[in-house]
Image (cartoon, rainbow, N blue to C red; front, side, top):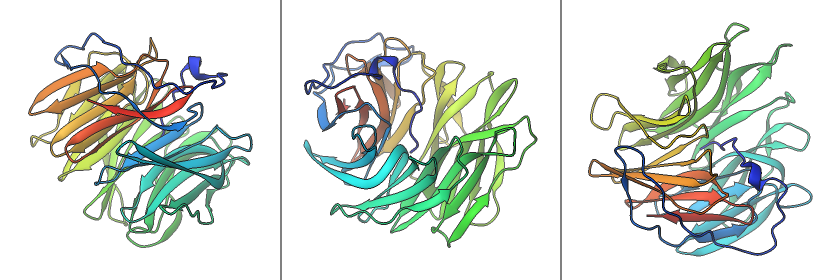
Length: 355
């Protein structure tokens, strides 16, 4: 999953003085989302949440991730968390985290922008050993990125600026489904921007969802590939601004959540044909979706106040609630074993909480 670009204003310039586990607060539920019971206590994963971060969950429920912004030398730290027990390892990588992925064996991968503004890929084993990073792009660009990993291999998709106008186009590099170096995926006219890729991998096929923007608005596009050509089409064009997509695949079904004109929208084909749901709690911030055992979890950061919202669908019924008192920002929804949680950050901690 890729990192949300939203950083609450209240998080900037804050120096952590004490370790605090955020309390929970009640919230009015959006239409068609019933209020859930009070949240379970949050569990701290690591101290310091002022930088960029991303996290994923394995099928066993172990949360793995990486974060930046907590060391003077801008080193990225990796973290692991399960059953209330956490471990943290400082890495040799320095820069800003864009996305992480777990390969299902022992490696957590991270895509990051290093201190010289190169886009890089690194990985850390569960035993705390980092490998030499790989330069994905030296374009000295503004990047957005996402990746998947499986059994020691990866597939990264990112956007970078091309030409003299700063136009954004999509690129990829992979070792999954056969190794292939940096390859340009999209080529558009100068007034079209392709950015904010989100990817999911299932049954040997990569599903890619991204934002295509123009001077008048933005739509979502979707494309799929097994390593050869891409089959692409428009995924969402209703409204004016569609952006910040996150895609997940579970049991062969595709789930995409994004922002449309300041609302959170989920579209999936779990019932056969694609159907959409718009949540009533407003936000322009990047949401996240996770699915386990048929249960769907969606998390996002509220615009004001800056709080984290978690919604879930169980047996056809939606519930939702604010899971912290704020200020805080959602990092990602995670799910395993039929249970879901949201990983989030405050100025003092990165924490996880569920229903």
